[in-house]
Length: 286
Ligand SMILES: O=C(O)CCC(=O)C(=O)O
Image 1 (tube, rainbow, N blue to C red):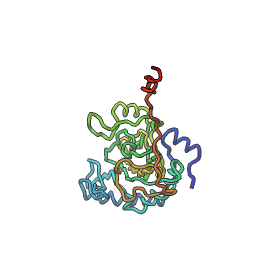
Image 2: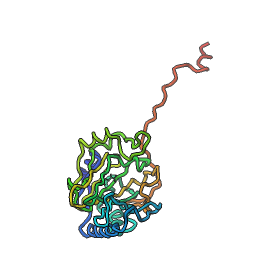
Image 3: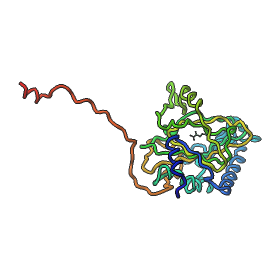
Image 4: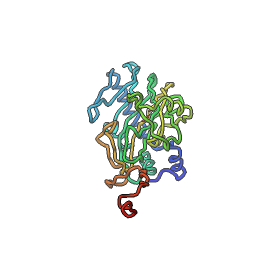
């Protein structure tokens, strides 16, 4: 089903992101909030990352401030493997339709997580682009960040640098160390022109994989939970292992499987034709 107008599609490709309201209805949101509330309740029993994803890494992670009295669960990896509500939104919803309008008709799922900023936590996300974490044969990848709670300017909204998806891909290694973030100069310049992606619960921010983005801590008493799903065009082939492995990687959420591979087009600069004459030319001249 077509969701996005031509104008919205144009805006996405020119800015590198787009916020769309009402992609999930109240019942689905409540089911997602209830499931998260159960996980947050359970986190009271833990003081270090716990649970297990398909590759054995912990599924649940908390802020350093987390206590049994004030639990601050900040990350749930691959929630679609544990919750029908999250699975349904990932696999078949207006959110999936929006993604299809942009990079369809054939779209597949790559990974999912919940990034939560609960009151009392201090987690921030440093400026980065997603593509270096999920390099593919082409860059038709979208990170869809669904607002499970209302996102305001105070509760740690996603911040983006509009138009940066058309620029260079910045390194995440500095002085021989993998930091997962762009260098300070790029981060400061991005922060100066940052735009916050706020909206009512049930909105989605669709973000191009090359867009520079980050987010500050939650300074309010209101939770901020984002359900984050990464999708790619079906003909984009992963060039590295999945940062959040899931049994659903590659699930076709729209269209069909073609098994075709499409690469980012690039031009090779051919060396100039040699100026010297060949052996045969010299023979003819002599
Ligand atoms: O949780 C956030 O605020 C940012 C999420 C993010 O940067 C990402 O998923 O790449």
